[in-house]
Image (cartoon, rainbow, N blue to C red; front, side, top):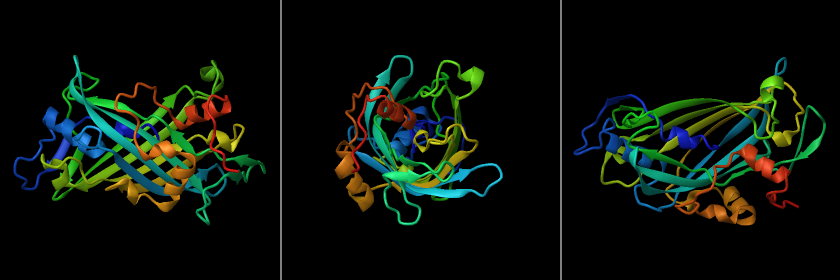
Length: 297
């Protein structure tokens, strides 16, 4: 789901609500309550309690003059925890620390891929699955724009939902110093839908909310695909949920974590000071030898 899940969970704005009868419910328009609501969606109000998100779906190609191709099945997870923080300017808040995986799988068998036969180049390439560590962010009662926080979402009856879209356009970490002149700027769009039941979200006695998530992403070709500047994009369409426990994750993901990513059974330390990692930065570290890719021989 990449680093932009962190932004979607802290979005600010107006709220359209028709509240059911819940005694002493949290108020989405109150900055303190809005902060609690965002924290209950993203993690837990209990400092250090691990929370796991899990999702799966498909990845397709899109190129001019040809049908879209189903390239991969995809499966992802993110394990995270929150801690209470405070900022002199932005007031009370919380810090979320997390790490995440996205697996690329054979579209017919569901097998986790080690290599991939590129249908456009005829080349067999090594698959580099996403293993971003960390993916952290902080949220406060005062937003970056200086305005009090409110929760962005809709409530109707006993269900709530929110939709957030992020068009992305920034210097590609794999590009050089002349991206504006000759191209290469990173271009993608992240699209999120979150939804769940109102009772667990607005009840001040619950520590976390029941959440389902839909995630779609459209971006440039993945760097390990070795597309060599060919026109086109890859897009992913997935859905998932916040799990009751890590044990509910799929057997496929459990096996991958056990064999290749053992640290992903738990979130990073609550005071993690590291810079956030994206899939492109992760690839750069592997390509430059600053990090070792999992051995899949």
